Image 1 (cartoon, rainbow, N blue to C red):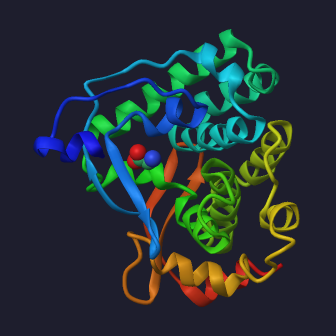
Image 2: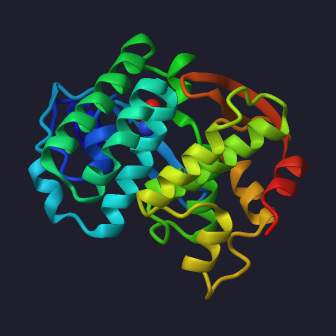
Length: 258
Ligand code: GLY
């Protein structure tokens, strides 16, 4: 974001040193900072000239931050389709062991998938919205918990599970095996299975923070929310998404009850 603002924009090369940045944040030119009012509310698009990702450095990442990156890997797989989802399932043991060959293959596949989406819609007028799958819920979790308390990708993983529940409740889900499949994969990758697990693991000192009411209040601050309805990206199946489903806040609240 500094490179976008300095002298009205200078070139930048990213050398991402976290899994989350390698598979997602370094690619596509989104830059932003959080405001008290919500996540990423002040920002600008500024494409990097190049991205240099060395998976060797991931050996030094904290376990929690590494798992957070796995949340974005799962999101990318659900957006891209069955092929990448299968690659992640097959690579799960190598991913948890941070095996460099597995990481190189999966990081490259995620970047290819994301770059294809971004190239078609760099300014997020339409198809790029797919990359926000799970993020309306994730941003609400991060905001309600207090920024910095729940790592972004961990909130995204929980958000993906909620998005699949939402698709099922709204009668949109076509691949009925997908929620169970994702849940098993999250378990293998050490990610919280759902909001209940996240609530008990993180927020024993602030039980009200992740209440359905607080979460829906935070969702209404999301950039994609309009009027009374929250606009969700939902998956019918891996690679088959609805990009803008307006859903009443009260209905969402009912899905988030403990
Ligand atoms: N992180 C989502 C995107 O770059 O569009």
